[in-house]
Image 1: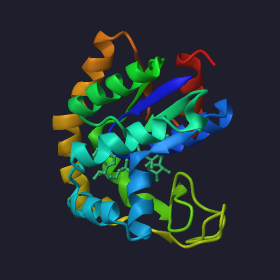
Image 2 (image 1 turned 120 degrees about the vertical axis):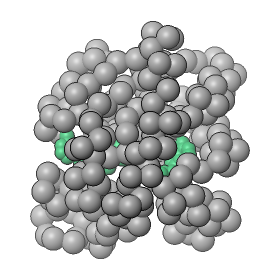
Image 3 (image 1 turned 60 degrees about the vertical axis):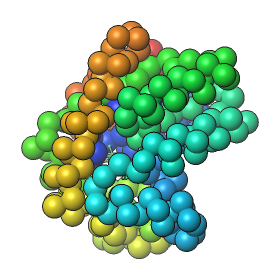
Length: 214
Ligand code: ADP
Ligand code: AMP
């Protein structure tokens, strides 16, 4: 199964992609996670990406598309994958089409998780991310067992710099301008499925499995 997760920042793409990936035994590929891992390791890509991420803007397509193309050619993607946070622009979606065509495969579904802007601000201010493994929590909706500590690896949980309210507003307007047009892009290709992302996490997960026929 080859899937794309669409949705505003904070809609629940990462939360659901991790669960769907585990359920279907396919790799979860998050471009945001790849940039954050690069930053942690002090790579040139990480330092370049940080500038854009901290400002709530998109990392330029030329830094993003090749990275995903390389990742999709790794052997663990042979049986499928789930892309989380990519594509985020029409040129990225076109670049993805070219890579998939070269590989002789295509996307099964683009899953749009629909959450209105009013709910997003609350989600982002309560999101906590693990500095060790990148796992995501929410202080009210999905709290860790011990406050400030990751259940999975025991590392510290932080509020991401780009989850501060002033940056969230920029990220939302970037989403509406540059990423939302992908909904029509995949609708025209007859690949779009939509779920109501305002439901509790388990219900969103069940709805996703249902729309992808699993
Ligand atoms: P995205 O990857 O789309 O940016 P996340 O999966 O990180 O979004 O979710 C954003 C925040 O909202 C996280 O703190 C997460 O725990 C929380 N969250 C995700 N799905 C739901 C849901 N259905 N209901 C309430 N909170 C949720
Ligand atoms: P995310 O973890 O998906 O919320 O992404 C965090 C940040 O990483 C975004 O706000 C962007 O700055 C950057 N980013 C992640 N994926 C992409 C992408 N496909 N294109 C451009 N920038 C991206």
